[in-house]
Length: 120
Image (cartoon, rainbow, N blue to C red; front, side, top):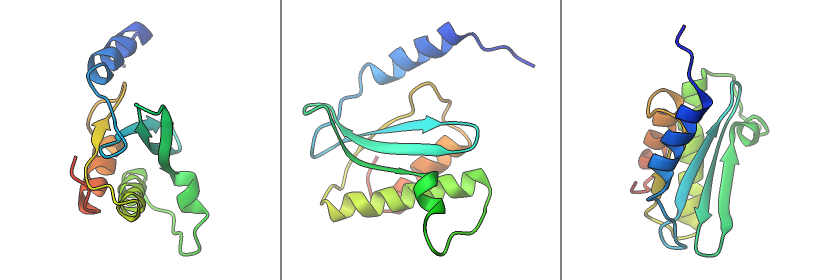
């Protein structure tokens, strides 16, 4: 197995997130991924406030929840987050993948947001 140094992850985060800023009209969508869950939140960096957040924990609380693969859950979370953002009349966003590589669940989340009608 390949051992990933934590400093390497922090360097990636600084490189990716340093140039990304969100506003109230075009928020930054930040991703956090654990082994079991995935979290996404839309952040306004000017006001330093979270506009909307949604996670797989919220998905499990819904009535019509069915256990799926983690990538399928991530895509559903992206679609739900996009629906909430559309209700707030936000049509564009900036995607911040943080320390994660753009593949798997992170990519599925971004595709779900695009399917929901938000331009990334």
